[in-house]
Length: 164
Image (cartoon, rainbow, N blue to C red; front, side):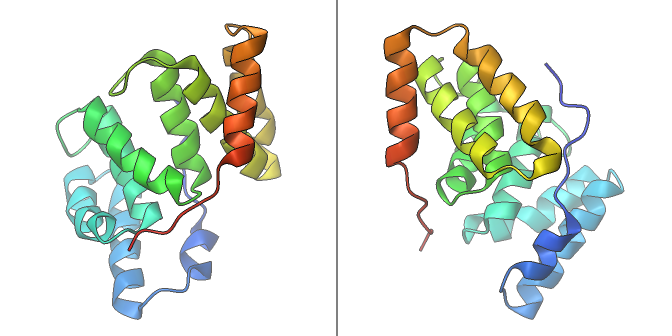
């Protein structure tokens, strides 16, 4: 299942309290991404992602998942999505949940898929909440009651953590 539109709101760049040089690098990467200059975008995102920037990690995960500007690599995509998802990035949580559902880059695990999809739906802005809920609910139809309970408990126990 390909996502037709995958975007980071421009306001996310303005609201994040970051150093001016860091914000400028992120803006350059995002600008290159939207110009479809994916190799340039990946070069901007990699150092930021390595330093723990969740937005850069999410973009980089998407580039690896789709093979845009970098070789397609689901394992690498899952690693970057996980790093951003653990920091609370809803887009990364959504994408990581889909990878767990499909077993791409990670072992297929419906409980982990549901956990991440639950978290991403709960934090989603209103304009995308309904579509995320539909995907989450579709995954839930493949689960037993026990798996649903475990996934919900894992989501309730989860707390974001910042990278050092």
